[in-house]
Length: 111
Length: 114
Image (cartoon, rainbow over all chains, first blue to last red; front, side, top):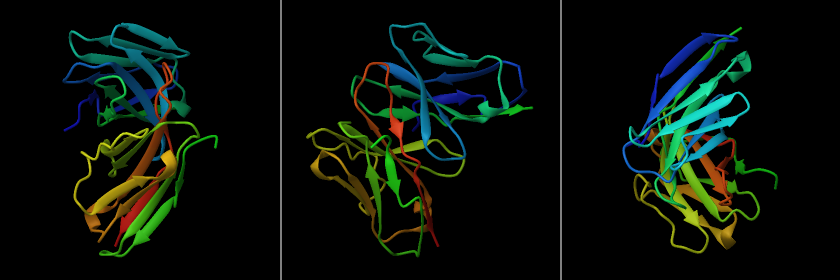
């Protein structure tokens, strides 16, 4: 079964708005990562947050991690049509172990 | 190479035939992973190679699936006697263990079993 579950499954917003996607997981983790996928092909790594970190920023991306609630959120600020994609969270349970991916959130940003 | 390369990008095969999917990871990356993704779904783990350690095969769905990694570099995923439910995009990724890094994925092989 999948470790991560994203919420919502689909999100549609207007260009310029912020998009927030959530991820919940079941077990303790070493780190949590977010990936983006266009057109059902290869995934692109966006950001990694470690279990001892609570918040991380990269450009228009902001990731939070709450290990007590076993949840994470990805915020994309000032969205653009080009941000339209599927976004996946993935957890690494221990250092060097393989990632377990969630089901993803389909984000549509309307021009 | 600069990225993870997978071939072929698309493969249509008849039910019952064997197929081989190839992955060239980033040079120097010690870890290599195979996942598959059915339409509109998340990624399903298949197999994981780390250096010279025995591979983690715990995700392979049946004994029709096998994979090898020669010389710590190129990997081949083989599916024998393909079935229609094997139709999916097969994704390969590699990682070098860098801090704050993640996996680098290839573009995948879309397998269609007819």
